[in-house]
Amino acid sequence: MAPLGTATEPAPTRGRPREFDPDAVLDAVVELFWAKGYEATSISDIVEATGLNKSSLYNTFGPKDALFEAAVERYLAMRVAVMTEVVRDGTAGLDDVLRLLDYQQSQIVTERGRMGCLAVNTSTELGLRDETAATLSRRSRDDVRTAVGAALRRAEAADEIAAGTAHDRAEIVLAFTLSLAVIARGGASTEELEGQFTAMRALIEDWRLVNS
Image 1 (cartoon, rainbow, N blue to C red):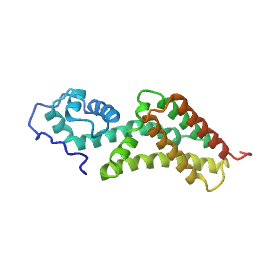
Image 2: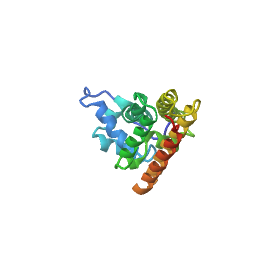
Image 3: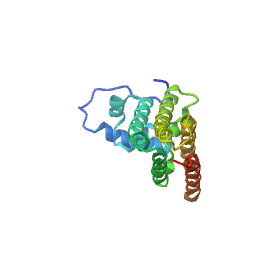
Image 4: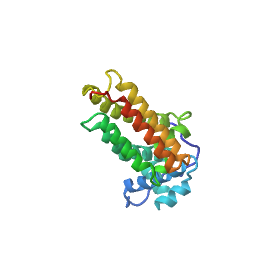
């Protein structure tokens, strides 16, 4: 595990048997890191958010960097996976990509959506100087790229889009998804975000072959 921070941690101690749900703890920690970022989140913040003492946290998850890694893994499994299922497991082509946009738009206007994407936030905060953070962020991008690419290959097979264009167009959708997270966290208005979606839908419709 690469060093994600420099905060000192308590040494593990022998305690009572675990009496809490680790997944519920991770969910609370996800919300905390998502809102504040890695470096701005202190051990005291984590103790307050979870209701656990430092020893219990350390004995279960390890130091702060390991807890952060587990939280990002939890986020990828719970939220990014839901998003990619929209296109990965669909049966259509371009319509599945448009459904992905519908899902993204429904999420981006929520309070959580305004915090951007934890994987993207991690990349922008730590990706250039921490290999573990970079690896997690890269995996998130690959998951989206693969899922969108599958939908666009279905579009190719159905002659909805020109042959040989699925890969490049998947990169465009991925870039839109990543930039959207940054724009939302940067305080974009609902009207600005809606304008982004309108423009992206128009672009995707322009990909559709006339006779498809």
